[in-house]
Image (cartoon, rainbow, N blue to C red; front, top):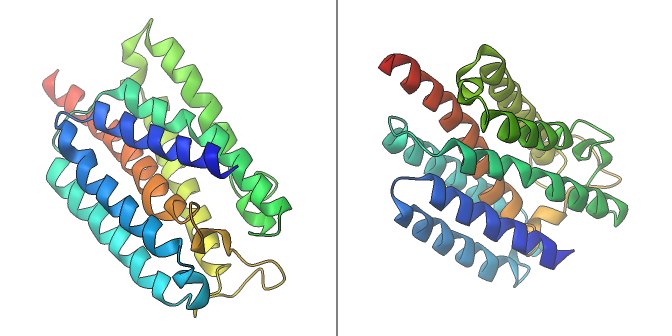
Length: 213
């Protein structure tokens, strides 16, 4: 399971780099991932969970900074959709973590996580857009991205509220401790930001295409 997760994380990084006009964008992300992996492998976040709050805030600020710098760029939509397809294996890993009592059921497809839906529909968009690229600028596709952002935000909130942090208010019987450990620390700090940015860039691509028309 850790191997599959690590490969999925690496695939996210590669696809995000391929999607971007500046391929070097993955270098700072990779350094960030390596640093988090090193720290989490020492179980520092498990020993003192409140330190993880600083990591989450840092990930948020870095994501916002990156998007502000790149929001006017048109990224390759096919690679971005590929990132969403990776949500399929990630969702099954999350379910296995639930079975191993490392996170609550609310974070799985039995709860409030709809990654399976977005992963499968990303496959369909990828297939049909190869025949009709205009699908990627349709109102339906925009709605899909907006729903995807909302769904992802909901799971992030659940993940935070179920973690052994000062903000914990749910899932006390089976808290979200997976994200405090290597390699799953990369889920909220690398994979989720990349998936979120992919949604925003797909929406941005649509806006850029409409403006050019």
